[in-house]
Length: 298
Image (cartoon, rainbow, N blue to C red; front, side):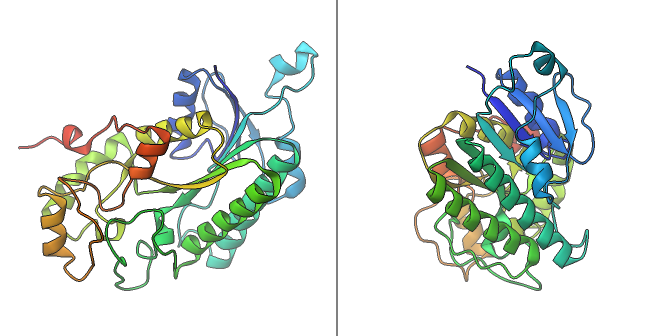
């Protein structure tokens, strides 16, 4: 049975794929963003989530005219998916990015839990693992990188995501709500697979992403699975695809190109160094969009 979902940042890179996916699974969706989204069946409410009053109002509003004119009041919300953010460094000054991302996440978590919404899913990031946006060269502490890996980012974006996770844990403990944080890998759009040839030819090209990624359509599946999975309290999941972006098996590739990094368990076959094992085991995630199938070979 479909859920009533509020999705923040639905007009962005991920939302443009995730919202149609959620609609196809029978969910009702209200989009909160600063720009409209042209998607039949989804109303966009223009909101500044850094404003607490706007956030509370938006999370307690009708989904649109049809619900409003029915006169039965506002139906309850089952889940909030919070993806709205300044998505990387060097788009605005660091302090502005940090303040915007942290405050908007706080406002969403506070409003959702005080309004009695029992499920919140927030977008965290692979950047919490300290390598993606590090200044200069920095190595991962070990492989595979799973959810127990140390989070010690030196950049303002990764730091904003660590703070978001800490706030999520606090609100989950305080309210008893299920709050899941997705540590999202490098997001691949369908049109992006053309660049994989260059990545394969240059082995270190994807080092900062741990030679891993997530297809935006598989990310939409993970969001849906989180909406459907209840009772986990606060959880963190790596939101990534299954396989390393390389033509040779993972263990051999890492021995050659990251020999200084310890390997803490066997990496079978082409398993991605940024591990999605928890999402597979707990959520039931099954990759549908393998880069090996989507990247044409000569």
